[in-house]
Length: 467
Image (cartoon, rainbow, N blue to C red; front, side):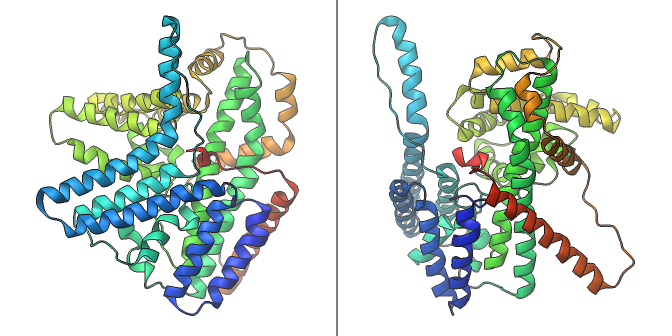
């Protein structure tokens, strides 16, 4: 089920909120939310619900076992928990990739290795990271294992952040599972954030999506103008698609009394790749830092060890996003930029005008998006060639002309402005009540336009659902 769908907005959400509000106690609300979360997950792919339930049961038991152990047996319990989670993730997400590469390598030798065809469960990368952070933090004695299975199940399967984040650590919501602060003011603020996220998805990301599809999927010999239009469109699409989902999840969380971490902070205003990763998918960046980079040694060793750790983390970051060599290379791309910046580029950039530093960071990020979006390395190489003009500098194709509607161009321009201009709230000399009414009116108008667009449009899944 997708937040920006008729099913969710007009049926699931109203029914759930009514049941939630009418339920008297927090414990009962947790049961209601858990049941709706399982329905939410099972709506489109009910067969994968068993995998989610297995992850919940496995990590609930693993945390209790780790908490009860000491010494070496505690370490072995953690190792078994981590291995179990990674085994499930590896089987469903990477088995096809591994067997396909083995088959390709053995084919010239006349050997038929065979390939698997295992479907990817929705959101498995996200809820696996939730499970890993839970058992690891229990091992680190950040908190004790929760003995209430409903609490653990709700933490792992809470529907606002279940399938595409943000990645929420257990310690962030531990107290809120049993004691939540719910007021009309917080519900109003959460609803406003949800509406903004909905608008980001359906009014910007979805409306520029046809430009991306034409450039990346329908134009094998695209000209340079067409390639740059497509890349700029994808740069906007992936930001507003993912930030839109994150805002919707955060808003829903606030309505329910939960506080989720912020996931984006104007990443396209970064002046370096180092700064970009402090602003983009912040919950993932901090997760990788605390559970991978620091345990590997972080920057506590030699410079060479630090560079190795950086590249390792970002290669694994790329692999986490998808089982494809393009994602591996995307991870290498960002890891290499981080290493080069540490080698001295960042200090030299600091002496340049802000505009040049911004252009460097943005172009580096956009170059990475080519690898992220391309279907394979051959397509990525051809796209880079098109960007450099090797396929000509002529006019755009008929398909791109058709996709360049007034609506798409307008929303692309608005998206560019919103993405790079710092947020500000002008001080208006008006009574507080009038300002509040104006803000409520603007938000309500945004909601109506978004819902009309949803009702009139086609199904459009979030891009990060496939990760």
